[in-house]
Length: 424
Ligand code: FCB
Image 1 (cartoon, rainbow, N blue to C red):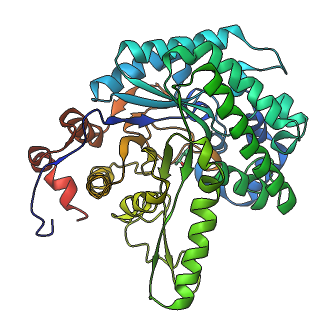
Image 2 (tube, protein in one colour):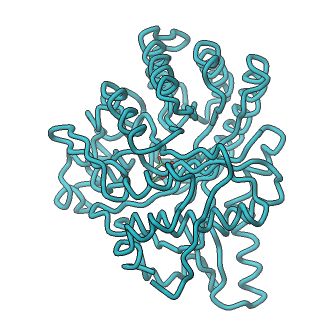
């Protein structure tokens, strides 16, 4: 470890500590536009021709049973509690609640009621996401997110969910990373529905913004005290050389990527949900990083990046909840150090006046990482996909100590010195 003075980093009272998941990634056996896409001829052909099937096997790319969290949520939340968490973020699967247009499935509603009840009984605060990307098949067949009716359909679904589940939920995250989903699905054409169509990209962006605003109003009508936001994935940008051109590039990229959604929805957010994974070095272009320390997906880890993103949110003057932050690290080599560095940054941002109120690590458990499939391991808890056995990784116990002490204390750092020093 560099000659850093060891000290305690204590967080504000009532800070939320926990982890996040998303329905499609952990529940298993969903039926939505993604599950259909995963098995589609085009997708399978693409995977085969890119050599990815040879590398990971076809099953890697089909969500299937996943971690079976739909059936094992009680066990999983009990484990979260044992790991010191006092908050959990999860998402409601639209295709389960409304498998047919306009028909709500009581069994699915009862399921999520019990999910929330289970969390409440454990004294774990639920942060509930209404849309974490997949959509029901009937909506896909009506044009999906680009349909002009989409905002109306979304609000009908959201209203129903909040009416039936809202009593015990204070925090609603209406949309997860809409900018990522629209970019991947409608601009880069990598995710369903695999379009490369700029007009559709803007159409979908417009629809999702409209859906969010309408939903915000509906939730407030049902429960004026509800706290509502989106989860926005912000990138920290730094300059290789401080030249005027680089500064302009950074300014434009930062505005386009980090602020368009947050500015447009400023009046419709009680808090900012910050998801954070990426750091981008600007050098007459983007992502000119050295990639010195990377996670298993090759994403660079930049110890101060979360701090930088938090500082960049200052102008909104709103409470911030870190709704995702984590890394793919199958061997659990870097996770302890990563959490340590990221949380030091959060602490510093708080000291400098940013109102950060919670940290939800991505992810509670290993899961289906979208187009990458199962091989990336983001979990604090390791999942054996054959036996469904759950096993907390060592870093989960490091994080537990932090949750329990409401901060990073010297004795914890001492205990995990070896893991922390490896990369410092
Ligand atoms: C985020 C997603 C989340 C997960 C992480 C690794 O962009 O919101 O579902 O896949 O990346």
